[in-house]
Length: 345
Image (cartoon, rainbow, N blue to C red; front, side, top):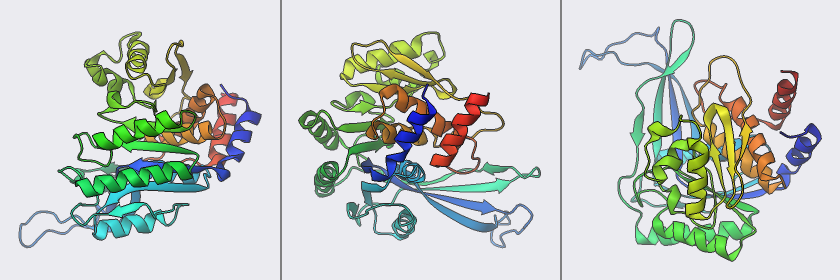
């Protein structure tokens, strides 16, 4: 779907890109448990899991930033709300490893820094498996003052960068960073600057965005239309639902199809299905959508067509799904190598 010379030319422009991001920034905390270290709690008699290593990584919005940095994007400007707690300290420490300008990260002492703690245990064959996750989340709306700060910061970030990525991961209305007021403001930014990319990944509110580019999966398309996710594997349903959602919102969209690839949909045009790149062996799809977002947005801002951007997003995702027990990333060298592998195949 893309020639090597074209792919290399696009990748070479990434270092000059400035990308703003707005949304829910989580801390992913991995606890590596050693099954050979057996110890019981004196108080309860239950097994006390023995943690031998802690791995912290930016999650949600941070997963997209990890992937943009791995691809060589030169400057990232996130807008998010953190608490005033130890999780925020650990998260910012990890962000300092990336080309991130953190001046628009807002600290609200009334909020928690969202954290997913993931205990990982190795089996007898040496494979890592995730146990029950421990979630630390906010369960109330943003305060009016914090929401106002997010809107002002989103404007500043949008004006300072080549394009904007929005990651709306919290399903409950107004509990995350992307509230109804923030959504409305993003539509106003898109309307005032129609040639500038605003790329939105929203789990539950995708149908409520306007004047942006959307990136739902098939299940999210169907849910946005009030249809059952059980329909997603029926022939022709993905194409029909994606096109209907695009007509409803008036927005172009990239509908991810899992192992099939990406459907590129633009209003009043015939959808184009961009096939994925097959991989062998075990896969871990956690974070695959975020890596595809990073691949597609960086390509679009570097001058790729929508179909070329979808092809690059597929290349990136085909690399990250092979990284087990972690939320993977793909470097430019890995993307080039995967392109060669697909040609030999």
